Length: 131
Image (cartoon, rainbow, N blue to C red; front, side, top):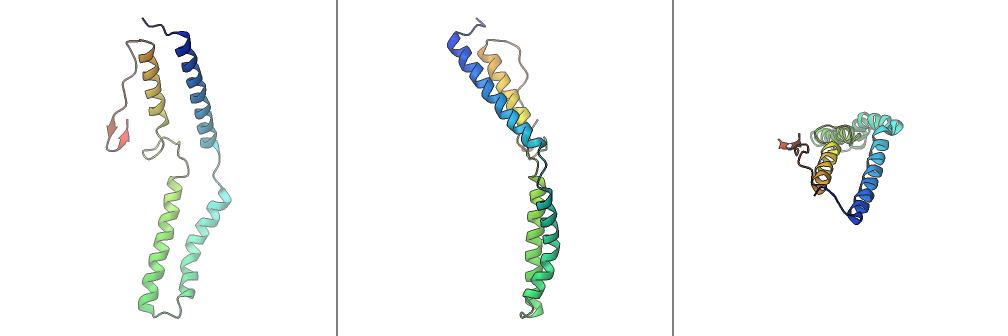
């Protein structure tokens, strides 16, 4: 009891190597700086777009062009705000990839396979987020 045979040990070792490689990649992605130039261009484009759209819609009546420009500008602004939230997927916020919880689940499963009786408690979902 508590011992695993050689085949399972080799499978476990291979799985841990793959997991380590995956975490290394995720850590590298976390440390990588976002495209700062692209972010700046996007920020300026969001604020220049209403001016360009206003000039493009000059031939339309004002009662139609103003709401159209406002709607398109609002959509572009919201897209820009959404991309800021998606910029760092491993920063441990509520909407990020739950790397810590995945690692805890793997640890629990490994300890169960090895026959240990004590292991960390499983994470619980509270309001759509894992804690």
